[in-house]
Length: 520
Length: 81
Image (cartoon, rainbow over all chains, first blue to last red):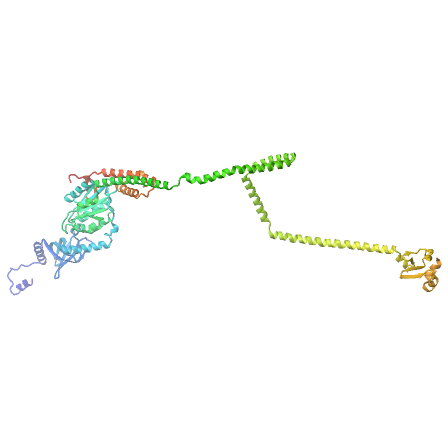
């Protein structure tokens, strides 16, 4: 434009420089740009990238000097095999267009691919690490394959060598029911279809109209990294990891590794190998079964034989029954031999003793014994151990009861009581005895008094005297004369006198005597 | 080894796994005689079950048919593959 203005300045050519309105020039530019760049491939690094709610993707493609704005419309973005990521080296295919309202131009991207294997591998590695970090590839997640699946689900293209190879190998080994879920095995539709197929097989109900497979094979033949790219997509990897049905991946050739291989329960290097993993060889199994039958029979036979052998060995080790019994039997015989005479002798001795005693017994006693014997027999009949035991038990109970009642405290209490009673009785006895004694003494005194009263001594006090000649009492004169010597007893003493000297004596001694004497 | 009637309903997998156990147990020889006989009988039945399953070796290939939404709506037989 500058050139144009410059040209216009000094030498405004007459009419050879057409004049555009802004819209016109913008339209012209648009036409030129779109015409010249209707299909271009641009290589660059994905810069700033945004995914607004509209579903379109806005991104920058850049290299070290320039930036190109790009857009991927929603419809295209949905079916792109490779989703662009920031920092990814890509080759974008599309067309250039301008945006007249803002004096801008941009690239409308129809397809975007990683630029070269290196970029692709770098991205793949990044994704693998992310998914591995989630644990989707953990060994612990992997389930064993069924030994003999009834139904095998195969996710693959229904036409082509892959499904043929699988069926062929299955036929060789063990013909099975096979359900093919047709999918696109490359291109944009590949990943969503494969994921849907894996989920679809899992969603089938066991025993439903379409039989639910008990094994899934996801298979694809060899191809370029980009051809196999669908099997690297996250949606496929997640579907494989989540599959409840054991899954074999067989994608590409042995050297090709896709992310589904990490998530699968087993990875087969080829579709044929997948078929080999899926089913055993029928004939081999039949052979194994035969072997198993043989092993069982042999085990049983050997088991019986071994036991018989052991029985035999043990039997030989067992001593003969006779030899075991010989000793005791002999002892029994010996004892039996001795028992008979011993018994007889004992019986005889007892009988003799009995006879002797019986002879001493009177007939009456014999009868009494007879009666007692009968009674004894009866008692014996009634006497049983259990009854005895019961009685003993009863008595023991009584005893226990008495024992319980008999307490030391009560006993000593009783002793004290008895002793008190004894003391009281003794006191009473004492009193009574003393009373009796005094009574007797009183009587004795009375008698003594009476005796004294009745005696002559008292009479002496009244003036009488007793005359004795020696030991004899003199009661008369003649007697006294005859005696010569007399002894007179007065109340207050005795006096010897001579019968002849009575006169004098009487005068000098006492008037009484004289008076009395004279009286005589 | 619990229920004998179950053998007829066993999958090949279950039957052959138990058969292996039976054979190994018998091989070891530490099973009581009575048990080993009943074990043998059960083993024979398991073997018969496995053989029956092996004889059911019939190939049948079908392809899932999908409706417009990509949902399976049936399966059609596939010939000539």
